[in-house]
Amino acid sequence: QLQLVESGGGLVQPGGSLRLSCAASGLTSEDHYAIAWFRQAPGRKREGVSCISASGKSTNYTESVRGRFTISRDFAKNTVYLQMNSLKPEDTAVYYCAAVKLRLCIATKDYEYDYWGQGAQVTVSS
Image (cartoon, rainbow, N blue to C red; front, side, top):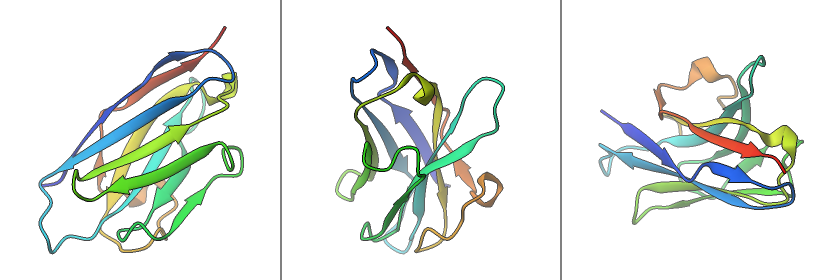
């Protein structure tokens, strides 16, 4: 059973940076999971932010974060990171990492993902 644990959320001023981590446990050498970050702001639907393929060679981003956020994965640590730079108040949300047993980032809807972390609050405010 795959388990995901996020860390790294917090309060940051506009223009600042944060790095979220998503540590995965329960993986075997036969497993291949694409990992995505979603976020949900108060009163809004959960939206996909970024995804990284099982190999780490392919990534994608939603338009509003492209050029500011970077997703990466460290296979030795079984951890996926979301580096968030130039943060804006509209980035304020609970951020979730999620996994699906696919090699590529072809799953775009939250209901397509099988495993979820507990969420990490990111607040961008002065």
